[in-house]
Length: 143
Image (cartoon, rainbow, N blue to C red; front, side, top):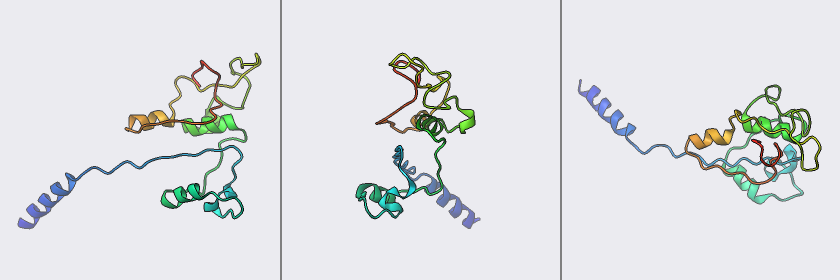
């Protein structure tokens, strides 16, 4: 009985410890960047010391493939977590695209009901941000 009480006391004490700290997440997506183009994956000509350090101190993914052969559908797959066949963005421009800045058929936006990884992370307490090319929709759309 004494051992059980000691076990119970120890279990409760350990469970009251500080909660685990959420890891930082930095996801870099670059057009036309191949698997072997960074030093951390064996590239010897172009130096990428800061990216190599991030890879060394963080998590590297070695079995990841683009969601599509062109950028907008790949971004849609990445942002929504959907398979290419289940997303509405099937090309950089096309059917369902809003009028582009030049007046032609423009980029297809994400739908208002599409939940993005950034929204899921925000709900989990993360501060999210994005920098660079978006390529989903036109100004004033949900994309």
